[in-house]
Image (cartoon, rainbow, N blue to C red):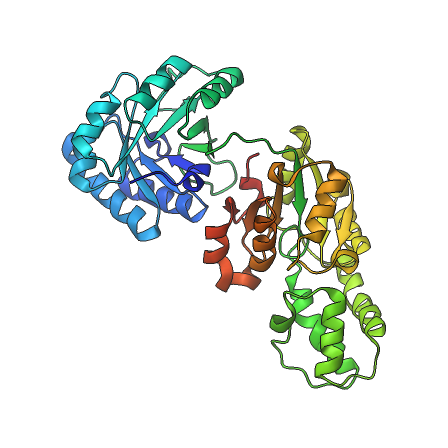
Length: 402
């Protein structure tokens, strides 16, 4: 089994310090996978062999059910018994070559490395990926020594296999919080994010209800008889394209310009007065600002509507500008993303596009951008495909870590 680098972009590791029973641990594993973890490592340093085996069997079954890769920390024997996808070993554990002999050629072997020398040795011994970083300064591993960014960069440059940078995750980051002990962000290439492009409706704001209702109200205002699910037919269209479609389909007397003006009148007040922020947007934008990552908005709405909503929500200071599909065409074409990146001064490969719509995320992905899929109830039927396409996937924007 060869590692899919995309799965390594979010790698969760369990920590018994966060829970006192197997039920709680497995619940956190499920939450981590639902939150976008492609690989989960079961780490148990103090359970007896029989209890570890019983827990590992349930862990592997859960990962298999949810489509995640299952890794067992250190214990090759249990990994083999429960049919896990692989094992992760440290420098003081079983040597990678011996782990390969015991598990066979199809299983994954991960190795912790703290220097270029250890990394090269692990690669030569047959490791499929490396784990490096400050790792587990938690209740189950208090002796971890942080590794400098320079060392991580040197390791990444020295080897040809994926390198996963490990970092602790705070317990109870928000009320009701759960999840694994640590996340690993990295994969097939080092992170080099300099810009972020945000969709507005369904991504930054919980405002898709406007676009479900507004087309129906618009057509009725001009004497048409639209179906209640009319918005489904328009979701991949730009503003003008949608206006021309409605005018033709329902034989409306208004011009496309009049339809667009009326639509603006219907929705502008919603942005100015009512649309709520999506969960975690404020936390993510503050963190991006601290990281020096430039942000903008690329929206199917008018740019002034995006600014109006962001000013009311106290978020506009985090954005350099907003661009609209009204000027650059719908998101079935990459023009709006390319223009946004040009104005940010960033290349597509170092720019993340945050989108809730599958067609828009696909366009950005095919244009070479990194993509973070954002859950929204209005596109529930597309979420599995969006999650598979995106580099990252979040239900709460505050969960994304640059």
